[in-house]
Amino acid sequence: MIFKILFGSLILCYLFMRFKYRRFYELSRQLNNDILTLPFLGHLYLFIGNGEDLMNAFKYFGKKALNNGGMSALWLGTKLLTVIADPVIADYLSKTCLEKDNITQMAQYLIGNGSIFAPVSIWRPRRKLVSLNFSLPRLNHFVDIFSQQGLILVNTLKRSEGKQPISLFKYLIAYSMDSVCESTLGIKLSVQNNSEHPFPKAFEYQCRIYIKHLFQPYIYDNPFYKLTPAYAKFTKNNQIMRDFVKKVIIYNIYAVIFNIGKLDKIKTFLEMMTNKSDGEQGLSDLEILEELLVLFVAGTDTSATGAAFVGVMLSRHPEVQDKVYNELQELFGDSDKHVTAKDLTQLKYLEAVVKETLRLYPPVPITMRMVDQDVTIPSGITLVKDSTLLIHNWAINRNPEYWGEDAEEFRPERFFDDPPKHSAAFASFSLGPRNCLGYKYALMAISTVTIHLVRNFKLVLPGADINLKTGKCLDKEKPLRVKFEVMMKDVDDFKVRLVPRTK
Image (cartoon, rainbow, N blue to C red; front, side, top):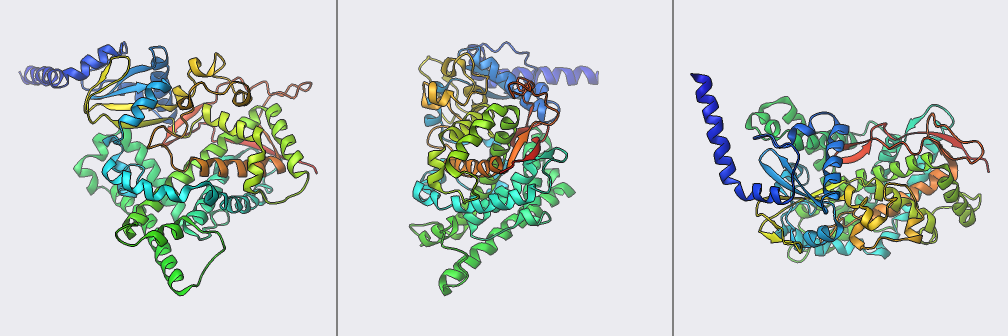
């Protein structure tokens, strides 16, 4: 009897849900959703497993969209996501749907109303002020910081050259944290020389919690979660990060007032923001804290992951690495001179290698937006209010209609010979008005550290079978296994072997 009552209640709940979300189901049918959709669960059953399983599920829906005119449907429980893999459609919708989806609200615990996830009403005026700090002349000054930190990285890596394979990411995340901290806050964090610093450990823990919350909201949105030791640890790590940035802000203001403590002539993001902060026209102290956290959190992992992917792709493609090295030799010779912003503008092949790597392996493979009102796209399909838009950067970057039939291949020359047919076809730094504000900063940081790596080491794929006549890696055609952990990362932890170069 009890079973019949429960079963009947489930049927009634399901019928009510079908009626309540009837417009969602109609949209799903228009998107030719032929994937088994379970009642109440939707497609969540495909997202069970580890980070690699999650990324494989996202890739599956991206390919579905590519084979279905650039769009497909994805159900996370009762939440409908419209997956976009066509750059033209993505470009249109990224300019129309500006609100971030509520699935990203977990990040607000860490960065508050930082502009990356803030509501449009907060994001729009703040973006205008923050964007002034990202002009190219100002960014050029930071290349010196990247180069100095790159030299520290090289000296650290020399202890591991020629030995067992190492995790390149382990070293690059420390390099990135030091670079971002110095250019953002104006202090030397020295993570490369102090792996026990509490800030990076707190940052790593918060990232793990964020990804768990994304796919286990029934645990982390549960009010009882706040009573658990895990929540206490989350709160503690959040406070560590905020207190660290607050102390630096206070020190900076004190230094400006008394004209002391200037570390160098480079003007940091913090100095530029505090000089503009006048209460009414500039940013408040809280707003500065939030934006600095955004810069640190977003800039650190993105740059480190992007640089690690570049290193791995160079190890998988020795012929490409040789071309990069030859280009560096033409510019630098055997010198160990610092890299400058002017140097970066002359290294065209390196730039193509970095972009081609980020095309195939964007650190942020997907972005989500809220559809806050009905939106009809040029094809005539109407995206329904309160549904979610999933812009599939991974799939857009591999769309053969815009990149050719060899879109899955690593070929840096395509940026010379056959550039993309649409500007939105390269979606590695998101699209539209809410794209990544620091994409030039990231490209500079990635390119600079790659220069230091290639000048000093030959990056070799561990256990690779090399053709002795051509020097090509016979394993390069094997797909790189990736996983989803806030950023997309290599399953094998970016393992490479370093062989010292003779000068």
